[in-house]
Image 1 (spheres, chains in turn purple, brown):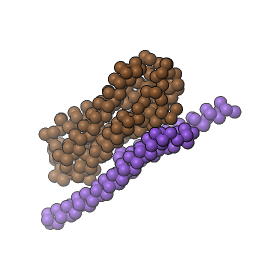
Image 2 (cartoon, one colour):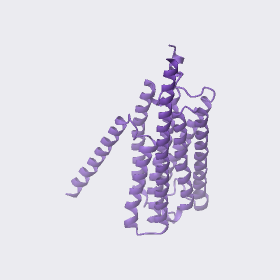
Image 3 (cartoon, helix red, strand yellow):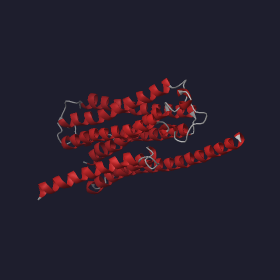
Image 4 (cartoon, chains in turn orange, red):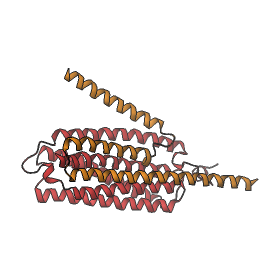
Length: 108
Length: 207
């Protein structure tokens, strides 16, 4: 009986180890992409591409990097992150609403 | 079952950082704290963007910033983010020694970053005479980047303190959440830096 439970729990540990390994591979891939984005960002500035094009692209690259950081490095893609995700999205929603409200009030 | 058995079970659960109520509470509380930190840095970024053109003399962003050093600093901090992920990977596999090793590497990379930043500020002050009081741009720049640097100092002290304090204890359900939260903080510092190198340095060079 004890042997049996031991072997199942050992099996469970192996499954978890495999899961962790897969997660680690995803994290290394996201790290590689983040390095790539950094190279692109610095490259664009060094090559002095038109600033009207470069500025939005730089911001976009930064946002993508942060999404990688949040979801892969800070484990937000894993279970049990409903609460932080909900707070974050409602915060972003409030921020966007504020910007829209004030720009429309001033503009019209 | 005594308190000690609860914290040191024969077999560690799947997610040691969230296995206890204390761990779960720390986790939620820390994400809320990060919300507050985001507001702090958002304000500092807003201030910087409003004052970045209020320069004095030759000390403009285009003239001051050197991309080589910023690139090295970015690589150091980005890599330290990966090494702290490695540390958490070993924590989940209950390998305390390897976790400590990767945390140690993270600390070294963080110290490298800090060294570069101190050199950068020293360089600006002594070569260019660009200080906190030079212009509104100077104040905004040193406040924003300095606040981030302060976070790096705090994060490094935090990780080192955890490593020293738990050196002999090993990994258990009491300190696993502590390590996990410190690593989240370290990632957040990297998140802020991504925006600093983009908004302050790269967009400053573009003009």
